Length: 360
Ligand SMILES: Cc1cc2nc3c(=O)[nH]c(=O)nc-3n(C[C@H](O)[C@H](O)[C@H](O)COP(=O)(O)O)c2cc1C
Image (cartoon, rainbow, N blue to C red; front, side, top):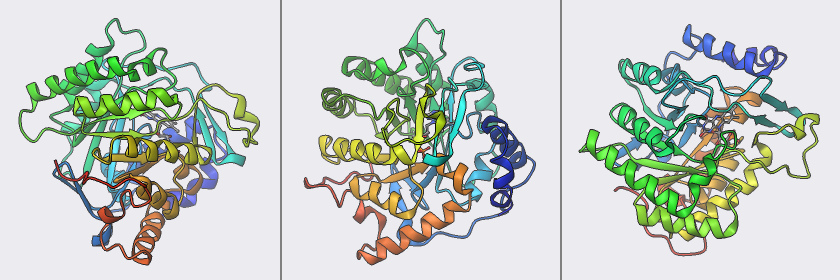
């Protein structure tokens, strides 16, 4: 793939410049024309939607919904656009994105730089011949007077246009945002958003998922699991970037403030995913994200309880050809363990018996 070949050149540029150039190249046609069909063993149906494979593009790569079709053609089973906020905002001062080469990681403190929900909505509405599942991730403006109203606006505008919605209460770069993960706040927020969704899309509404941080304290995890079940949220995305700095980090940029993603996030994110799967008794579909760079990494999250997975950082280090590699490896791992369908493997490493998390 051309973008794989361009990778060494892109990696010599400052990371945000490389990202902007990549989006521009994709917009001007540097993407595969079509994808090969996926193996039926990789397909999964969730929320009445058929995912051809479980490997998705995580939020943050296509914040403004500029290139979802192009990314689907690299073989992703679904693409998540955003985070979008009601009003456009510039984000934090640069530099604000750092490569941790030695650790196959990134640190970002972008701070929700985006064109705003209206611009994203126009692009999503203009999708011609949609060829896959595209979700929208929503947030709040940094200087908003009313946090909940910002999310309500996101749901109201984007619910008719997105195949699923993600409520991002877990980015570390917007002050106060992660406070919304507290039990009482989550319950109130989800209830308001469910009502907003029902008002604009009464039937076959897109599922509403909550994206959480890997840095939740143990007691907050229990509370959040209860709140998620009680509020009837449709699923969880686990996890966002971490503010932790594991002692294993070797890169000189490791001290930069912001959210850490990539390889060092894999184990803690999978541990949180397994814990939340147990705490919610497998009753909520989970999208597992954080440090996936191989089929084995994806399989580990699926066995811990993820029905779908996503990645971002590994694309920076391995290029978009990685998507096909992960799917091939995952297919082989499922066959090795005697699973004929992906759904059979979901949560198979968890200890407690599992209630079906599929369908709705
Ligand atoms: C540069 C960058 C920007 C991101 N922006 C967002 C965002 O806007 N909203 C969000 O929910 N997550 C965002 N994320 C987090 C990713 O969606 C994902 O949860 C995290 O990076 C872990 O996955 P990974 O290790 O495969 O990158 C961003 C990550 C990176 C690296």
